[in-house]
Length: 474
Ligand code: FAD
Image (cartoon, rainbow, N blue to C red; front, side):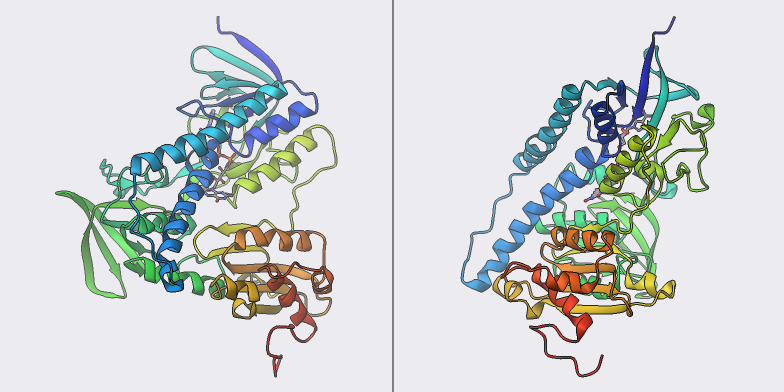
């Protein structure tokens, strides 16, 4: 007979949604089990093992390589760096990913969370089965099974030169020519890494612009730089087919730029056209849990599914598919199951693209404000007027705030520039706290820092920013 274990809370999935939920619940005295099916048995989910963390470690290396090249302009010439790919791989996998996943292991151990390695499948609304014969009965369950890369069927031709982000982050080699399908953040981040390491990158995007959800004025400085670093960026272009030919993959492209289409051979292809919720062999139907038409589990403000003692958080519970959204939902879900008056109602979920320059935004974008006809005023401060930006040669950036025209209350913020990802946190706080532009003006920002651009953009709500020529017409 199968072993049956009883727990108060079962968390399925050990990513940035699942493991914080398990830790938080254990901190509140619940008996918690966390089950995760990572092949290498490492906690941390996509984010730590094959997403946020390895990509950012590699982007850091890419930035260093690019800065070393750019330094020639300031009179510093370095020798062409030698890249030891195996050492770089080991550094990322062991010193970065390994250290962090090991740290989560320690945290779960320290909190008394029971970690079970294996794939969980619901057999009914209170039980999951784990291969090997074990069953776990739970009072409450949080599903945090995340998402997986989506590769369209016709491109699945069984050739390992066609990679998803997971494979590309393992740096199998540095190709001479690489095609990136999809001009979203994952494609551009990984494309930037390979470009810095020496590959010629071609990006193909079906829509008319890369990074379509981002305000165009924030994309422009990045796109300008990427067009210098990449071989080509083709927007409004579709891939009509991928085929394997000796030593490469031939991509058939169709777009306004190529009359009659174009075929080009690449050493490898990164497909980064989106991710889909991961409910593979999860047995949601046995538990009676409902999904929407796109496969996301439908949840309420307490992250409860239609089966109230089962909650869902993170990528499986809807967009945006971001680690910090999953972690924030974990807190709400646990507090709700503990009976606290907690609900999911963020005013601003920040998003960051860790290219160089970075793009970051939070709250309402200008595109959204216009589409939803939300009255708004746009306050834009170019970094060319920032002493800090000039001193570090990063004047291409821009800081923009969206405020309500009457009250000057903060509605949204967006930045493009070096370190934008760190700076957006101030705007998130301002939007969440219902701050008005005056609050940002009166918060003294350290000099010389790029953060002053937020303060100066806010000054524009009241007429002029100190370091900008006074607008003649507003
Ligand atoms: P996941 O991290 O997907 O974890 C789910 C876990 O559940 C996995 O370990 C999975 O193996 C396990 N699992 C699934 N089904 C079962 C089952 N039935 N039984 C047991 N275990 C199961 N987000 C950011 O915020 N910032 C970034 O910079 C960023 N960069 C990214 C870069 C890349 C290349 C990628 C791919 C993603 C990136 N993301 C980033 C997105 C981020 O990784 C996800 O939003 C985040 O990991 C979602 O967390 P999660 O807890 O919902 O699920």
